Structure formats: C-alpha cells, structure tokens
Length: 395
Image 1 (cartoon, one colour):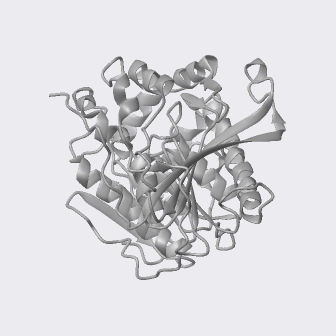
Image 2 (tube, rainbow, N blue to C red):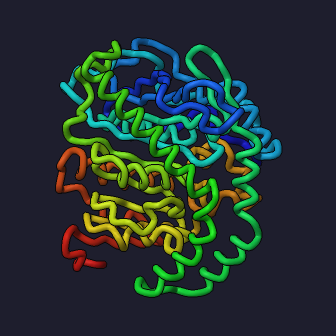
C-alpha cells in the first residue's frame, strides 16, 4: 500500500541534466538571527543545468542522510529515511552543454522549513529544456542544509516555533471564514488587507525580505560566475542580459514575488501556491507574473494578479493541496491519508506544474510568443489572464 518510487520520472526535454553545488559568503549581512548566527551569512545553491552527455556517471541521489532523517521526523515516520536513496535523473558535475552559447537562468526557492531539493523534478524538467536553474538555500530557515565542505546547518528552532505560533487558530478561523464566500475582485482587496494586517509585525512578514536579499546576493554571484571573476564552467554561459526568471513554492513563492519587486534583474516570476506575505502583497510588480496552485490562492494570492500591470496569470487546480506541488507526490503518496496530498494523479500534477513553467519562461525569457500558457491541460483547471497596460483582457 505504501510503495513509492525508487526513481523520479525522466525529464521532459532533450538535454541531459547536470547538477552541481556551491556556496557563497555574503560578508555584508552578519548575525541576522542574533546568537544563532555568529558568522557571515553563507548561502548554498544547487544548480541544475543542461548537458549533452552523462559521461557514464551514476545518477545523483535525491538527498543526504541528515536531510532524509529530517523529512522522516517531520512526517512522523510516514516517509522513510530511505528517501535518500531515490535516484534523480541528474548527474553530478558533468560538463555543461555546448549546443548554445548562453542559457537563460531561473531561480527556485523552497518552502519554509523545507529543503532545497523539494522540487527537483520541476528543476530537472526546466534544465532539460535548456534552462540553468538555481535552487537557493536560506540558512536557519531551510529545514537542514549541507555546505560543500560537509558542514550541516539545521533550522533555528526558536524561529520555526515563532512562525508556528503566528499561524494560530485565529488565522485558520479567519481563512475558513474567507472560504465561505466567492468574492469578486473588488470585494477581495479589503478582505485580504484585513487578513494580512495580522502578520505585518511578525517574522512571517519580515523574513520575506531576508529571503529576497539572499536571492539578490546570489544574482550578484551569478554575474561573477558569468564574467569569470569566480572560476567555473559557467563562465560566459549565463544569459543575464535577458534578465533572470524566478519561481518558488509556499514561502519561496512569497520570496519570488518580493524579489520581483526589489530587483530589476528579475524580469518575470511565478508563485507556486503561496499566500502574499510581505510588502509586495498590494504592490504592482510591473513584470510578467503567474500565480499557480490550489484554490487557496483565489483568496490569498489573487491580489498579486489584480495589482500587477504587466501580463498576469492566475491558474487554479481543483482537488489539490499545498504539497501536491512538490516532489512529495513521487515518494510520499501515503500522506494522502493525512490529507497532506490531494486526489490528483501525480503524472497530471507534474504535467501541470512543469508545462506552465516551461510555457511561461519560454515566453518571457526566450521571447517565444507562441507559448500556449492559457491552454487547459485537464478538467478542473481554472485560468484567468490579463494583458499588460490596459488589463482589459480579463478572461
């Protein structure tokens, strides 16, 4: 009954997927969490990238021992720590493809107290289509991370507990009340303002800015990788001139939105099933943006869609829950019994998430205006979109 995948699905695209890890020290930001962080902020990244051959290397494993044990503990033993042995369709440290001179870049941000590989299938699908995908870690708020020198850093318990206390019964009660109504657009903004006002003096609200700054610092590092200031095989391979795309799940979706507000280098973004915690919530991002996820986003993320003056998309998927938009659908299907996962088939969920990401970034990073972003892949998918400037083409 609890049988799970021992290997993830083959990526969509024609490229082999390479995988490498790096970390960088931001000497301008020290002791962000008081006594919990005594040194400069050290940010790890995982890079998924297009390659031409696997060079007869073995497939990379999904995770490391301590991370697998952390997932096991977080799911109360329902997800085996043997998840560390799941094989990905990626190969560590193989040469980048020579088929193109440069490749467009997409950043990915995981959910709060989650892990950097939580959407490895999505990242692999994008890399197999010719994108360089950078998964960004957030020290002390990533569940557990491992630097290239082997150092292990766990999430800060006091901060995690404070986040949990913020999401108290009053919040759940408010959200349940919201869901009893189908608000038209004009009605939603004041309702959302009242809901989010509760968070504005909390770390839930403020730390989105920390995550945004992590991304902005890593964008600086990508520029140095490309110009050769930091030696690597990525020298001259990063298409920074066309701008960077960004996506993220849950709190990582909040970070993606905030980054689009904060930094002109990020030219388009996607929020995967995240509320709008952070100062961006009622701002005009003025960049192509997509919100995709469960019906929750109709209430807690529609404001981004409504406020944005550039091309905007709001895609809802019926019968899904928050974690349906992660790798859990491949190796933790038993979580359906706890209603952590919804009723949709994993192959369809993968198609939905990867398809809309590929179409969106093809259009706004590669200028492929034939991308069929508004195509419905299945029944039970709601799609709204509006075009830039006039925002009059609401569907």
